[in-house]
Amino acid sequence: MSIRHGYYAGWRSAEYEASPDGDQVRLYAARPAEGFRQVSPDRYVQVVPRADVDHLQYVTTHCTWRGEPFVVLGEHEGWLRVEYSGGKVPVAERLGLEPFDRGVYQAWASRHEVEDLREETV
Image (cartoon, one colour):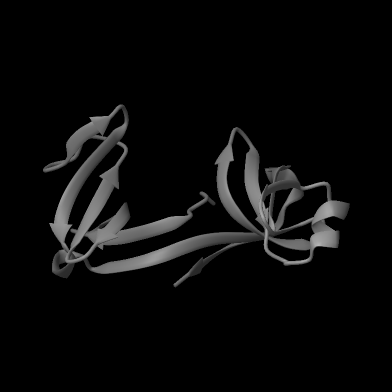
C-alpha cells in the first residue's frame, strides 16, 4: 500500500495528486504526460477546469503504532512519518514523540512496526 496524504483527482481515466484552486484544479504527475508541463525534476503539472475532473477527494492514511492512533504523513525508505492523533499529551510524551508544534507530535516509525494501515477519504 502506498502512502497518500492530500488531494487526489480523477481525470481522463487516471488519478493524480491535485490542488484545487477555485474553479480550477492543478494536477501533478511524476512522469511526462500529454498536456503536462515540467515544473521540476520528476514533477509535471496541468491545470484543468474543476468541471472536467471525475472526482476530487482528500485522502489520509491512518495507522496504529505502539497501540495508539496516528496519521501517516509520508514515507521514506521503509520508514513512515507519523503524527499522533490521540490528543493526549502525556501519551505523546510517554511514547517519546517529537513536539512539532503546540499539541502536535510526530515520529519516524518503521513500516514493519505499524498496524492497521488504512486510507480514509473525505
